[in-house]
Length: 251
Image 1: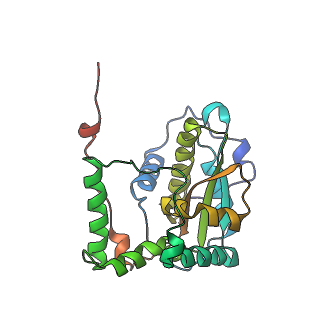
Image 2: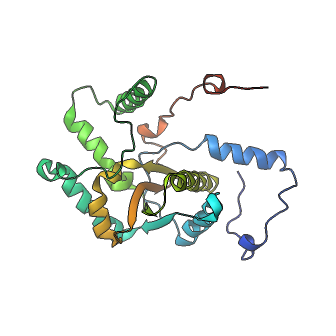
């Protein structure tokens, strides 16, 4: 798809007329960015320029938020800063005794799994392991693969997202829209992402390394970069149910 190399200086202050219908090509570009977004788990070392990251975040910030509260806080890690965080988390993850002292600060997943959610969870896990040749019971390789999360899957850019603890559930919904905007904007520039709740287990390590205040709570992390087209794990595309299975039309 065709995208500008950079936004004009007036971009954020001068929007196109929102009441003019997009052209078929514009509609197709938006849809392509949405449907080709999926979590990548192997990235090339190709750097992502800071100016491009800033442009993506500027687009993402157009996400809606209740009364324009804009609850998102973004921490961009590259180079030595990313390496330091990766080393600290990897060390904790690989030490069973230390690992046992870490836990999520909030429940991302349900306390009790039921169908169809547990079925979908199991399927995506085994689909990924199947591509990688990891068999059931191979705990060492499962540990190693999960640990790749904490290296940002070798992406050149790691992102951490925090929110002020004073904000409530509605702001977390707003945050999800911001994250989706960011991932779709990245696809529009030829990049890929992997949103990662796995980082929340090490929220204390991340808070120390990033110098977070007690008021800042970790939401999740994200890998950003150019996906490795030769990595078999990147061929995994998760299934989606048909619209009829989750939608009611009332007239």
